[in-house]
Image (tube, rainbow, N blue to C red):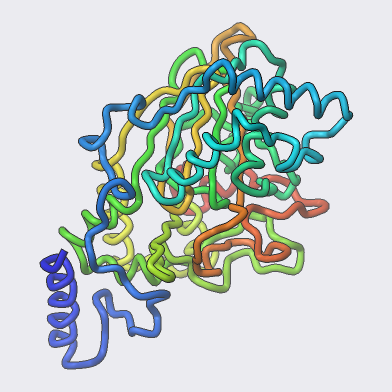
Length: 388
């Protein structure tokens, strides 16, 4: 821990000398440009983890027992009897002695532990999509408030390939079958329920952001100031009509508030922003991003979600991706995941610059915008290459 910190500051001092004694951080940044104080210590398990710390998916899994499944079915029956719509269901509607303690324990693991849990045992094969969505939503109310996931206002995202034959895929990854790179989403929690897997592919990839931070700090600490300063992000046409197409502020990859270190990272969208602004990323910025990507790939683990698996992730601590998937001919081979973005009821402190969109009340996600659509195909190519 001490060695890592000393190495970081040694790099700063050498850069200061190299530049003639001007008060500059690595990468040519002034101290005022760094969003928050840089964490120089080494993060430890369980928040920083890699494949050697885990025994595959089993290490991350919690399994619902018969009593918990029965409690969920009881709660589902009650909300349907009362005629509640999905978005009318609140925290009190899915309280139950068989659920409350275990779900509270999962929330602690998401915030203070490894930042990821795969909850198994939901009998998805027994329910139609609407009933399964209600159960899923009810579980989510234990953790936070659901957020809109696009300008269309979809608070429950349906992750499936909507691309029609002969048409370009949309920029939004959750409507396509393509491979998605490691990234974070726009809520404090990202949740994915596997209602039905694909015929093949769609393998999940996850990585601890703090393990990435550890590796960069140990091997290339000169990149940290650039990552803490962050990048402008493109809003891809889903912003409010009076808002700018690109964030006027930089969004930090890493940031630290009151000892809580957060991550935000979607490389293709920050590259879209550079293109829109007519400002190419500098060589130092590209090197920092390439280093982040390389460390993320090296530290990541892979597994396949089965029907009824619910993956819950702390979006400020864990990045996720997926491999390309292929649907089969039958209805039971059409991949369908349900996604929730949640802002925690009681969230740790974080910088406001993590928000890309100017949403009401400073919440995450993408507020609905009348007359707007989801990000179109052009945003996949505007940086000059195919993006995820």
